[in-house]
Amino acid sequence: MAHKVTLIPGDGIGPEVTRATVRILEATGVKIDWEMVNAGASAYEKTGEYIPKELIESIERTGLGLKGPITTPIGGGFASINVALRRKFELYANFRPIKSLPSLPTRFPDVDLVIVRENTEGEYSGIEHEVVPGVVEALKIITEKASTRIARFAFEYARREKRAKISAIHKANIMKMSDGLFLRCCRDIAKEYPEIPYAEHIIDNTCMQLVMNPYQYDTLVMENLYGDIISDLCAAFVGGLGLVPGANLGDGCAIFEAVHGSAPDIAGKDMANPTALLQSAVLMLRHLREVEAADRIYAALEKTYKEKKHNTRDVGGTSGTTEFADAIIENMEAVAVVS
Ligand code: ATP
Image (tube, rainbow, N blue to C red):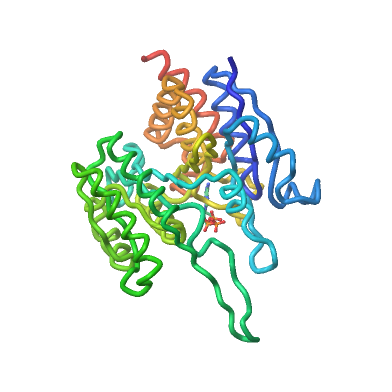
């Protein structure tokens, strides 16, 4: 039976990387029944809504989404569309594996980090107001419920995947109450997983330590904004934002999307690297237990980077999005024959 998946192409480079990813997924032979409904700026132009009702209904039906990046207007009155979707479907865990592709040389080889980012609150609560002219107050919300839930997610993942350790990243020396509560929740949960080494690190030092030696970390759990920033930093270890996948996970619903944004500077030019969304789709296939197809795409990705002939510009090549996708599809046939 075909899997039902809501497809949200997004804005900027979204439609290009989505098209490439869908072509590759279809070439695996896995049957997917796509329900395509857009959100964001392009949806607004057509429907007058940033998050059309049809999109909500579709995700409610499928419980599964593959999503391109969506532009959030800066300043202005509209809160983030991504954040709104994550909240609406209670996708409380943002899971971002940062794993080197062995065939793509980078400054640090064999990086294997996992970022678990709280996805529903923190500075992203979007509660800001002007107290008096010239003074604005923004509320960072940290709750015991969300902190415990994300800590539990990280430890469960670490236990299942036999990860080496968990580091909780914070700034509790300054934000004593909010980050203090986050840490207390992590500590409490850590006690239930005595076999997993647990440590706490301050965010600013963590950034320096990561750049000096990323191998000293393994799985990092943190609140929303820190996760956003650390994800971009860690993307650099494996070749940049064009590579890193992500999953927004809740109970009974999941939306897979790349870490990068809509990259308006290169939109519409067939220049974007579709690897990040493709790797997100590989995570989705694993979630759907389509392991063979996931492995085949990953092997073709490896082979394509090893050949170095079809790399996109962000990783030192000259190829376009379409040519890169064509090479992956061709290599999928090659790796299928070999295996
Ligand atoms: P946001 O704040 O919306 O999450 P961001 O900070 O992740 O966005 P992006 O718009 O994703 O920023 O990208 C920053 C830069 O990285 C872009 O200007 C672009 O040059 C590059 N980039 C991002 N994604 C890709 C990609 N898939 N392929 C090639 N280059 C990319």
